[in-house]
Image (cartoon, rainbow, N blue to C red; front, top):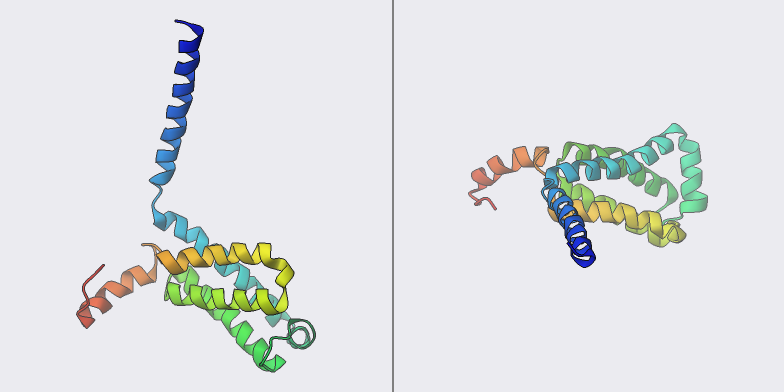
Length: 161
């Protein structure tokens, strides 16, 4: 075998190996990808909510001095934010009303980015990316949405996807 043929053979073996690996990765079910997206996005907001609940006086001070969301008094903004941070992550983890939950957290991310911490855009893009996938593709099969929506559709006379 000539040196060119051996080199081409090795290269085609490497290409076949890479293509095989890509093929395996492409067969990973979306459900397995959606789980860490749901838990990861939920964790960000849940942990923030827990920190805000740990010291309510500090939370009100933050919303008064640092967060300053327009059009809302600081105490109202604080209550709304903490309610969202505590309730919506639970929905994401359970996969219940996932698209609505993702939309709410995407809205909150947008408000944080635009009005509170615009310099933190690299972090906010990561949050938004996770939430956009969940908004567009849903929670996957391991979710309450997957269990509850088919019977609701049947009751309403709506044909499945």
